[in-house]
Length: 489
Image 1 (cartoon, rainbow, N blue to C red):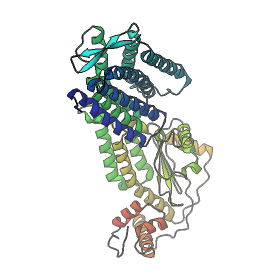
Image 2 (spheres, one colour; image 1 turned 90 degrees about the vertical axis):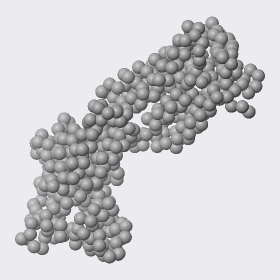
Image 3 (cartoon, rainbow, N blue to C red; image 1 turned 45 degrees about the vertical axis):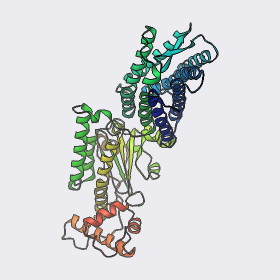
Image 4 (cartoon, helix red, strand yellow; image 1 turned 30 degrees about the vertical axis):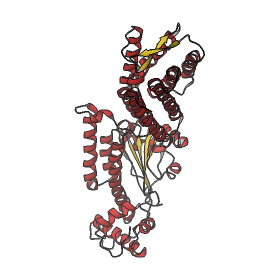
């Protein structure tokens, strides 16, 4: 069988869409949007098959059946694309106010599909175009199809532009940018084809010009819908505001990571981090707590401690809406965008960092999270040092219960270092030494004893000490214990 050169775009698009369908089925996010997306990809695959029937003409009247299939799948696919466009352009797309709009769009698309399938009123037939493809012969109701296509294409262009408003979440705005960048060329081409056909200018049609653009648009939209963290397109364009902001953000985070061990208190480090991220922070520890940033509501401090104990990895509100709705609702109630746990396997050293809602306006791309998580790993050592310092202070008095009056005062000042329970840990042996030096000696001895007890197995020693393996590894390097015989990871 001869494959004509004009069929190559449709064949390439067919293979690309099979890969996109596989990716969608095995992606991290599976929800209503992704199911609609897969339906669009399947319809688009049928459209490619119809294009091959038109271009290859494998049997008599193949171009006719291919043409009808092409128009039916186009109408249904655009209806579903409208649904996706609305979902990324409006935060409240799930509300009942959009239900009537969805019903009208789907109903109209099904009506057009039925008329195409059972009557010649929209497409009366097909004729040859330049010997390689076919062209429709309009029926009396052709305006129904063309009007629907034009309205859908215009909505696909302008609704995402509306979605770029500042009220939208950062991820939603990035989704709109990706949609505009990849869908606009396709929609402009389709509008051009419709207008030329209406003007009786028969130069080309969609069977050859659109397959690869459709595949490219579906790949970009699929990426935006199936990943919780997506890249910021503006960051890769020189001199943009986003690139300038992100570059400064990464530089500040790296500088804080280098200097974090020079901070004398947890609150001082948190204050600097709050300035960089422009969001309030709350630190909860077994022995200490601290606040940083400007609090409008003071809700974060009331976040249930019992719920925090079940969190063993970083949790971001926007990423758990479908996976853990209970925790998501709690985070929305207390104005928390993210929760970062530290030493969660230890009863004594476990602590959590709560970040305010404005955190998600600045940290949402994979690179953003990579930078902040790198910083959090370095801050873990500071948290452990300061909590240990509190534990070994000799003669430390019992903390007084926090009353509503002094709690409100602490919230007003943005700082709280209460709830320091007395410890049974011994005081440093040599009171003439500086406290940090004594703490370091005590910590080094504990780590050395744990490694000896576990025969050099770092993973077992980390569990025994109640710290994460990477934190223990950092401490081993810090105290020069890496040369200890028999160390195993």
